[in-house]
Length: 272
Image 1 (cartoon, rainbow, N blue to C red):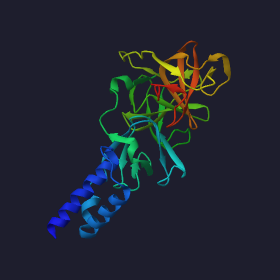
Image 2: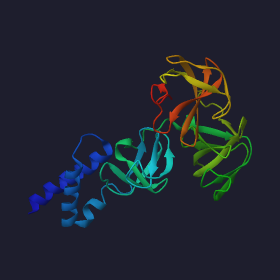
Image 3: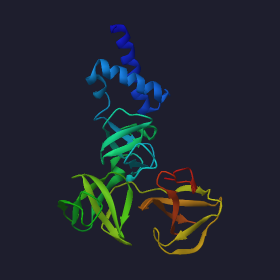
Image 4: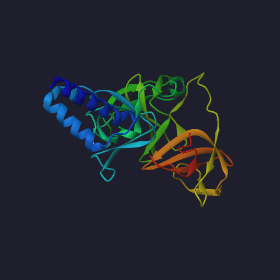
């Protein structure tokens, strides 16, 4: 009996790890069966394998309310955003407890520790700013940071809510700060921060892309044609489900690279 249990235990552990790492594929039915057998023999065994572990997003993804893409989207996560696992996965999905409670597709996760260098994410405040729990002027107050103080961003992505841009920070305290309104900026790159070098991406949307004076703002001439190359600055904005990129060539403007988790207007995909 011990040998049978040990074999089932090993299979279950490998199956749950495969859900998250994607190193190899095991039929979902087999995973579920092994989990049920192992938990029946020793209920505390599987509960200790993945819960509480850190994983990071392979790309821009969503946290959903249920194990289905048809369920409510609770929160958008950018590339390299970290989550805390809350169960061991089922049917290709795994529960998370942070930064929000819900479910993500296991295949969209990777081990933590592969985020870009934090030196690229250093920003300095131009004005005093409140840190809030959510990207909203009415979000719960956490603390106040002084003008000139430095912060570390979780990612370079900005979220626009009710016309105001927000960035998530990890230091000196975790939370959200307002990075500005329109063209007025509350933050700037820290002195000595490596400059963002332009990257070339090609338009793959068959009808070409409209160019805009601001993310989601009024369209301006001339637009960018199919197969034409644009140079991005690295600045990204998320308004609703749509992702916007700032470009410097062939014109200084903003274009939409597509939707969160489905940026198909440019190649490479996503264009970063």
